[in-house]
Length: 341
Image (cartoon, rainbow, N blue to C red):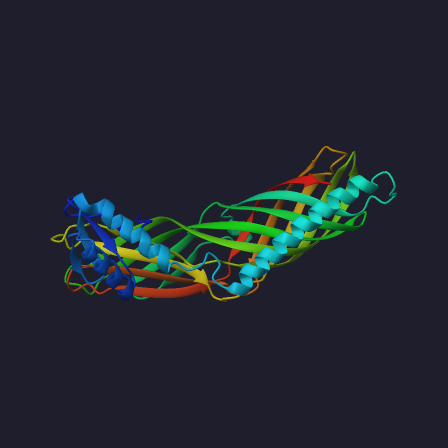
């Protein structure tokens, strides 16, 4: 699996290959190599560089990508929104902490701001709607299988009454997928059926939840809690992974082939998932933190991700295929929180 735009030449290990998706970027890389006197061979947007000059070529590759790469969060409004929300939460947490210490002995009310640090593990539970997404045409089928994913974040709640809170926060979410490419073409002189896999494609997003929670007292500081709400979720960038199978040129049943998978947001601004949570918590007492263990479920109100799968072979008479689709992302799993007062 290629995580970079350079790799060892599969047919001649004396060379490294650098690849570019944009013609302009390839031109700039070629000019940099020429200016520095680095020998290379070029085929459109691919460059073959001798291993003896790999370090110098890699330096130019890094300099080029440092110049052309987009900001981590490209949308300026989203960057400022994230900074403002994060700063506001930190400010509220600090003010709440100092206020609690300053007035703890004077205030009769037990209500106020509560802070929690949370971690989640999302499982591919089909029964909860976390299932494979399949797109296909006459010859190519791409299956996106959800894998175990992780989330981390901070939650701030305002306890309005003994049994009710309203809260928000921010979460960092990493989704993982396996993509399987099944190509079947019975129209060739020798029918071709292949199956290739990209073992992992990672996608990252941020979510701001708006949640209302109620709880039932079980005694001795334990509560059963249930919560529901909506979220505002945005992704800083699209995800892309490519791979290849060397195959054998003279073997009609196993030709050389390349395949790519893309995953991105349908809406440039944000997606809006609905959320549900159920668990048991032990409330904090004094300086001792509490904890929460529960389950969660969320699903986007509409389709929020687009997918694209590409398959191609260098062998003659085999045409490449590109298929596209979209789906509403669903997450379900286990959540753990550390509760701070």
